[in-house]
Length: 405
Image (cartoon, rainbow, N blue to C red; front, side, top):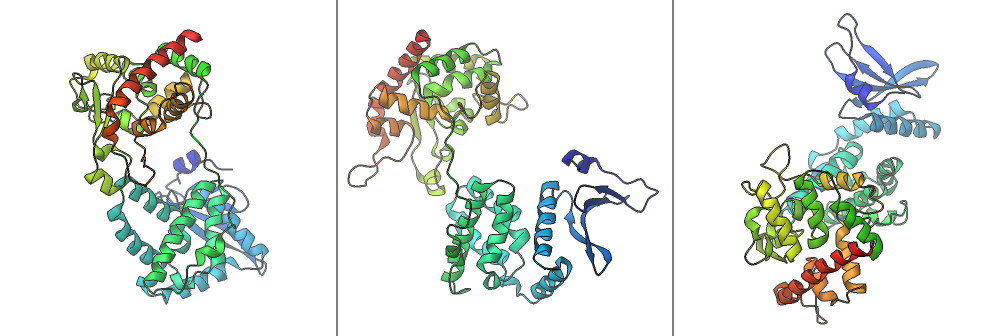
């Protein structure tokens, strides 16, 4: 069987018309002397061998080609001629008005939604449409797509074990179908018919140590980490400030106020919707004496640049999230045991259960939306004094945990 590396490196000698690289079950990659690579599947009918084109590499990856091959074989087992089915589908699609296709309507819906989304969320959604839905449904008239056809497309995602991705794909489709129904393109939302048809997905929590003794062992391991100053500083600060990984690694020196002992994260860098990023308040993180000391030490090494934690490859961007993840792995902590994001859960749990801090103060420090009994959002600055006291209490507590190991 082929590997992705073999597909990438496959070449055809200039003296040959083409070279075939066989995978399995009739699937092969055909390479021309000019470097084009196309997937084909051997098919048989009326005693004759034929072949079915499955797309070009690398646009269609090895795993995607295998999924397409398996889907064709399932169709054949059900008595469907894949070549004739494709011919009929092409003929049908030629008669589809361009503006009525799934892709056209999805693009229209997306164009209206993205104005309210962050750039990251918008990019993630559209990448999923391009990868998982457009290849199967993009050219079809939306009103002609029935629930079983949509289910087939989403089950292709399930076949690769991506159950969360499949669930998100159905949610995207649900929004697109509701939009189409609201604009009169279709009469009803068919995605409701698929409720219960997908493999149930239960969201997985980030690995986090919440036992005080075990957390103390982790903190000691971090103190003994032998990596570079930048990554070690990020590792040591993560449990003390317990902000999101992207917010910490993207910290800039102009956000750190050494005199006030605060780190002010601009709204644009917080995990919020587009409106919150543009019009929301900055998030103030009080720095304990321990956290401030780490920032002061780090400033000696990276203080002349923009970022507190610059990438070793370029000072113009911060370290990647993999930097701390790799460091935790080097310390013997897998993602199932503890993650960078897990420091938030560790702090939240122990502040509540061990130190008995007011949960509203904790949630405000985590930059979660907290509301009163009447549903009104609290002003996080109201808790600045309490949060300042809490952060020093927490830092002292983490020091004590290391002494209990």
